Image (cartoon, rainbow, N blue to C red; front, side, top):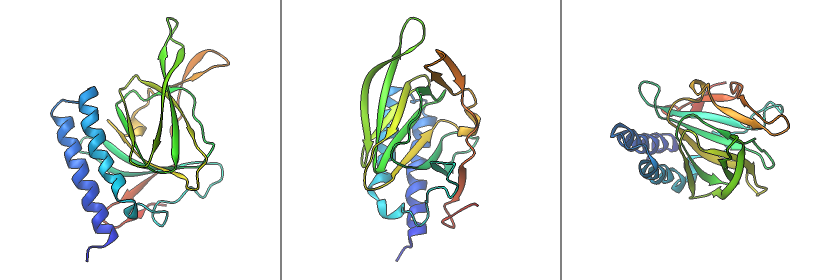
Length: 202
């Protein structure tokens, strides 16, 4: 019988091969992102392969979320992460400078989306709750903020970006008090997850 490690490895690799094919076709616009969304949602159908046993919250109390890099395509292209975050976690309005797809496995994340006014300030528009079996897509300049909803489980989600996060150095967030956009600091809590061994570093 296949092990959890081998099944997870096969599932993630199969899904990412399909996604890389979509990206290679040059279809990463709104419609292409929807195809990627459908592919990524296949991971949410196997919660037994993504448990706290292998993907746990950060031990450092100063870090209120944890991200594991599961897969990085050749040439530092499409990169898949697992994110675990506690209820109450929020982010300011921001954009990613690359396309993004976020799919929920456990818990719930409230996403508020925004447009820009004539001065470039964010203006709230529609919203969406990412939870088990649902996902959102964003183009590089799409604006959103998040709030992790109180549920019995920590929020556990899959984050797929067009490039590794450490290379998305132009990501910016809005500071309402000073009415300005600022660059994000580099995330210190991204860990590498080895699909072949089923182990994370550190």
